[in-house]
Image (cartoon, rainbow, N blue to C red; front, side, top):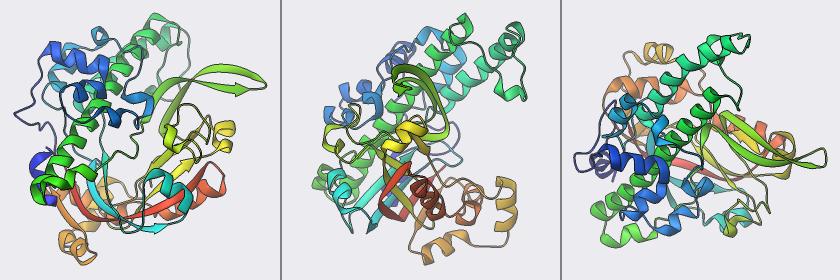
Length: 362
C-alpha cells in the first residue's frame, strides 16, 4: 500500500507527474477555482468540497497578481507532496475519546485513515518571496517599524496589501486543489493495491488550512466585526452551531487535525465556543519541533531509522535518508502533551487518536 502511494504521489523538491502538466491558462483556472477545478476534471467528487474549509476556494483570488516565476514553478507541481515536514500517512484509529463526536465525523476504533499534509508548493513559496520584497519597501514607505525584517507588512487597504491578499488567496486555492488531486490519487492507490472497491469507502473528513490570512466575521463587544485573521502555526477551530461548519458536524464542531510525528500518533479534535470567543476560532496545528533539522540529522548518525520505525509497525518510504533523519520522531514534541494543553485551555476538544502504519515523505 505504501509503495502504491509512493508511486502515485510525487515526493521531493520540484517533482511532479508527467500526466498532469498545466499551461498558464489551466493554472489560472486552478488559482481561481481551487479544489473545484480538480473535481470538474474528475479528480474527486462534489461531495468532497462540502468537507473543505471555505468549500476549497478563497474569494478574491487574482491570478494576475501571481508572478511568471510562480506560474513556472506551479505548472508541474499540482498533486505533489514536496519535501520537509510534508507527508501522506496511513493510520488507524487506536483510541476514541469522544464517541459522539467520532460518530458524527465518521470515525470508529480500528478504522484506517489517511492524512495528507502539503500546501501551495513552489508557487506559494514564490508568491511569498515576491511580496516580501514589496512589503519591505512598503513598510518603510508607511513608516512601520519592524522588530524583524520577516515581519514586513503593509496596511490592508493599501495597493500593496490588496495585491498581496489577492495573490495569497490564489496560492491558497492552489493548495486546496493540490490536496484534492492527491486525495484522488490516494483513492486510486488503494484501488490498485487492494481492490477496486477499496477506494469507494474513502471519504474526506476535513481539509483545513494553516499558515494563512483570511477575512472572517466575529462577535466582539456585542457587535459583528469582519477581521483579517492570520493563523501562523495555527488552524481554524470553529464551534458547534457555526454555519461554516459542515452540516453533518454542526452539533459537535469543526474538525481540527493535529499531526504528531511518524513514529507515535496524531489527533483529531473539534473546535469550541471558547476558541471562537478567545482565539478568533483558532487552535494549534501540529506538535512543533524540539530539534532543528541540523540537530536531528546529527542525532540520527549511525542509526537505521527505517528499521527502528518498522519495529514500531511503521513502513516509511522517502526520497532519501536525509528527510527521514530530519523528521525522525524525536525531532518533534510529544503531540499528546500539546493536545492536552489546548484541551485544558478549552480551545479544542479531543475526539480520536490515530496511530501511523505507513508514511511517504519527500
